[in-house]
Length: 311
Length: 284
Image 1: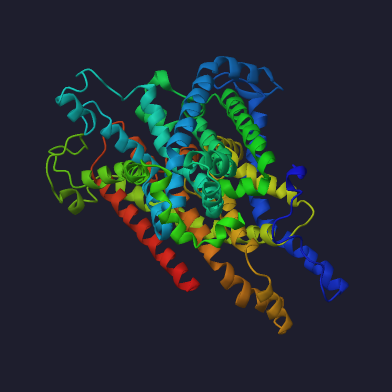
Image 2: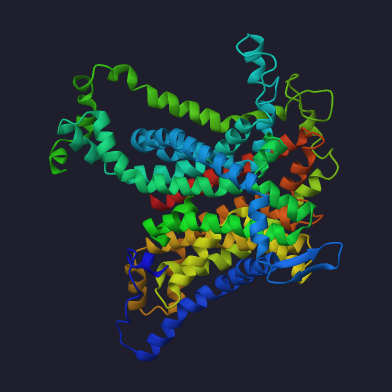
């Protein structure tokens, strides 16, 4: 962790008190702790403690109807959680990978257009991209179930002019789930891409074309390399939430397309099998945090946190 | 790099077009066309939602086909049992959650953006983790907590506590971004003019970082309003708007949901535009 923080941010460390007053110095040294205390206490109580409790829960054995669950250092819960749910874990990663690739392919040109050709309309265009966020995620996903339905406004006309066979359907397929998650997280991918592209000094591109680089060459040799941090951020910001998503799989898919999130939700809320649910949930968390940390290490935790917040 | 600067950039950008490639004439329409299409794609469910709020259908549940224009769902907005209370519940959670998360998160953001202290790296890592962990893990761990403590029981307070906790990190990083971009000279000037630290903070620091606090609060409000996953885990029988809508999908969606969605959307849009205008005026 510490190595990622070696580069100081622009503001730098708190400068020693110019007035050199020692008591004032020690009093000032306490200020950040007072400021951070409520937030850290809150996150400790409602973020770290719950995670620790879930860890305890994941090591219990027993049954709901045979005297409850008892703490037993049952590490085999983890092996069971992975082997029993391998199908869901694998499908989640596959769907999430499709979504991430699609988000990059479709999000990059959009971000590029706004960053390089948006001119004075940049922030308005960005607002347009983020506009769907003002409508509940649930409602947006439900609208897709209507739009993609067998005789809905997309498939209906295509079928009536004979472009698609009558039996063609999109809903309840893995494609629908990928499309739904893609829609939900495209803005998350777009934002870091936009931020990194917008930062690029446009004169660098002009310099490249003045030096007889074609537009394609200028893009490949100048713009693309400089935007890689944004690409990296977009991958994590899309892949992590997409893997944990279960609403799209539930509303747009069928039980055959359920993801690991559906399984966790089912184990927790319907089956009340807390140990297996907790173990599976922690497995998901560890995988995601490892992925996010690789990215944080490459970019620095602070930058990573800021990028995450941007989405 | 410096060679490009000598020519005025605006002129260079336009003049260079044709000689470089003869196809430039039509290819330059590709990106804008694509951009507009993508905007339309992103907005399409919102447009469908607004449209279906005016859909004249005989039944009480949304259907894929459009039967004409009506205002009856708008006039009968409270006509679905349970929907309006759920809508009100969402606000009863989002407003106090925003206030609490903004207060706590702003202090945290100040500490993060301004100071370096022992434990700083650990704190940053915890906040990074809180943002990076999938929502379903947060939701399930909070459910584990509330099951273990039995107090508060699943319901209003468990949701409120959960919402405050997932909003704090987002407020903190938003405020931090503003704080670390801020010029310290103003505060030093206040100090040199014998302002006490308290007066300096309220008269100088606070006004400067206010846009960051407002942005953080808006983010928290929107996150809380929209949250489904964490609420689903911690709500028990308590219903918020997203939870109610999700439950309704099994029997069909009443068009009034679209009306309320349209109202929320309009409200969010107005808030965003007002805050953008306020920021612009501050800059000018």
